[in-house]
Each structure stands twice: as C-alpha cells, then as structure tokens.
Length: 91
Image (cartoon, rainbow, N blue to C red; front, side):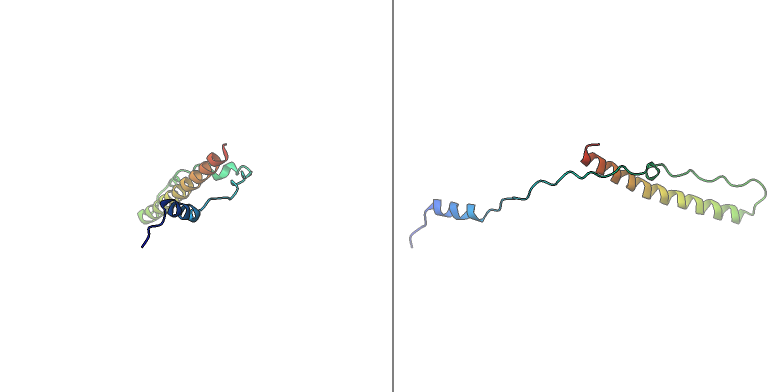
C-alpha cells in the first residue's frame, strides 16, 4: 500500500478546521439604572422602648435580622452584576 503525501494529509486537515466568521458583537447602549437599586440595605430596626415579652422581642429581632441578611445577599449580587455590566460597556 502506497503512503499518501504528507501535504495531502495536511491539506485535508486544514480543510476540516473552522473559521469564525461572525461579526463582533455590537456595543449595547443600556440606560443607567436607578440608583435605588444599588443603595445599601437598611440597617436593623430598633426595638421599641417599653416592656415587651421576651418572645416578641426575639421574634421581631430574628425576623428583622433574617430580612437584613437576605437583602444584603440579594443586593451584593445585584451590585456585582451591575458593575460587571458597566465594566463591559466601559463605564
């Protein structure tokens, strides 16, 4: 059996390669977002003065802290996404 020319093999392999002919993406012109979206979460609420049952104080404090942690978690992701978007746009 006769061996094919190495040039034929190289030519076949070059014909199998793909070339990306898609145009570069256009720059999106997105409007600036409302600054309220990047405003930090409110701090914890103060417990009202006066005699309150311990159970009520603990329940109120726990619910408030849980909401604060959830807000900060969502907020940090949003701020990170906005900053990434703005960096891509060169802002």
